[in-house]
Image (tube, rainbow, N blue to C red):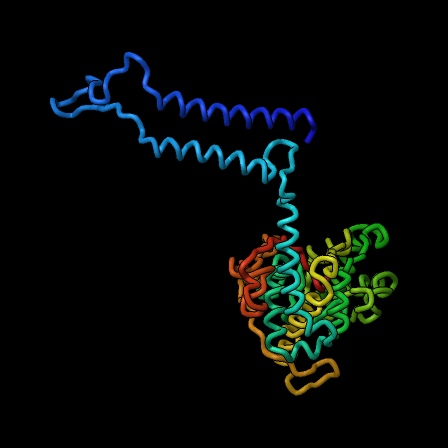
Amino acid sequence: MSSGWSMFVMALVALNLVGCVWLIWWTARRRPGDPGATETSHVWDGDLTEYNKPMPRWWINLFYLTIVFTIGYLVWYPGMGGFAGTSGWTSAKQHDADKAEQDKKLADAFAPYAQMSIADIAKDARALKLGRAIFANNCATCHGSAGQGARGYPNLTDAIWHWGGTPEKVLETVLGGRQAVMPGWEAALGGPQGVTAVAVYVQSLSGQKVDTTLANVGGAKFAGICASCHGIAGKGNPDLGAPDLTDRYWLYGGDIASIEQSIAQGRNGMMPAHEPIIGATRARLVAAYAWTLSEQARAAEAPAVSTASAAPVMPVEATPVDAPAAGADTGMAMPTSDATYDGIPPEMLPADASTDQAAQAPAATDARQ
């Protein structure tokens, strides 16, 4: 605040205080010629009389005491322009102190999981409950409260991972984020006809019925351009985030128009890195929760198959939601109770950790873009 504005605010505050004192004094005194308290001559219906009695002295003194309190308050706390008050208190300092106290309680709650592997966290019911709360507060905005995703936002409850589904890869995705890098290929494919031919071939890879002649034309173009990322058989490459085109999962839609758009214009979906947003330990917990959702789907699809990454996991609950329509608003974050701090249930924190609140904007999450 500039010195000019500071002087203006100080003068305005002083003027208001003086005005209040004068108003109380002026209205409380009786002036010569004033009628008696019961002699206002304001009478209705013969027996209903308006009186003009002064306020009791104790009441007037209370008004003066509030003004004295105000002066003391403005001396102790900032409120007079640029004058910072004699106590040194600021709202920023108070906020920082409260946040530091609550952050310490959160750190104590998360500390046991700082060095645990994702597979071990997935076996811990308490850790998964923490992970679910963190997911609801930071990831559900894009992936939905049940993790089922939407158009352009991956479904985390199936067994398909574009960037790799091992615990280590999932953690890497959450910590560092992902950036899709598929360019538009319309010019390289010879225009819209070439795009359509490749789109038809891509549909054939997933078992859809297509025009085989057109698919053969597209297959030749696919082998010369697209196979460098997706592989000659279209099985994809998790190291590049190139999806497997032979399954029936389509992040942006599997109809011919959607595939043509993806090929012609490219896709550049981005998931931000969450280590700077939620920290390494919370990222580890939410990664374990997301991986567990997928592992349950994998177990349901192939219960007799065991893999190196399919360690036993605790069953977790996900709040079901209706699958959003293409292009629909995906702001499906689970509401955070007023009795939580950073979305963490109070029973998961040390005593009294839920008494103070800290607002934190949810960040968009796209774990398998």
